[in-house]
Image 1 (cartoon, one colour):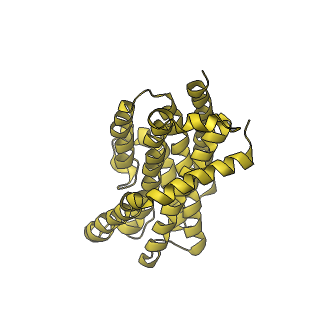
Image 2: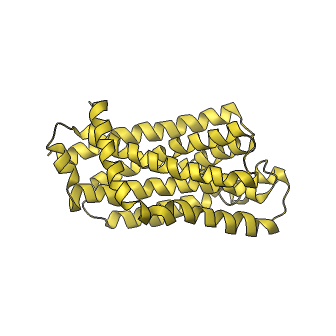
Image 3: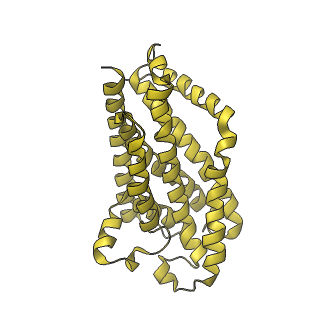
Length: 260
């Protein structure tokens, strides 16, 4: 059970904290992704000449790689907002215990934190979409808006399961495993930088069932104007299940951690 007014008030707490710390996030949240685009899409992409049919319908490598980088950025921000901050609130600062001593319930605490993570992802995605607009990577204004909205779902699809995982850990050592064995392989081999058809058949099949590829393909369809409802619905359902299931698991994990 949760109370929306209480969740909203607690969400305001995270916003207040961020107002005091936002300067430390500017480089990772906004500058680094744009440098990736400049290096990979504009500079390196200038040397890549390929048939649009081999680039999932993109007219240039820049148009191909930008949607992948944006989805990858949403994933990385989700990891960043739901790993160490959760560990800090549970173990180091014990902020969650202080919240639980008020009328707030565990579900309020988890939903407020996840909502703030989605807002952080949204703010970064909005900047990304606006800055990339002059490069002609978005097929239309509705497509650009769709790209932005998709990032909210992509972000929550990662933030919620990672939140559930973080709530179960006793120390931060588990984050190293997740960052090295999950985040980086997903970022590199989920179709963000090259078409999955370039992978061996077994690896291609594995890559296609990863949540990041679902987000990359969905973002790319909206960006390029190659929207296909059957494929889009599959991606939306997949990511929606990750988000809803992860949220449920996150609340249960936090209950076991705080109320025991």
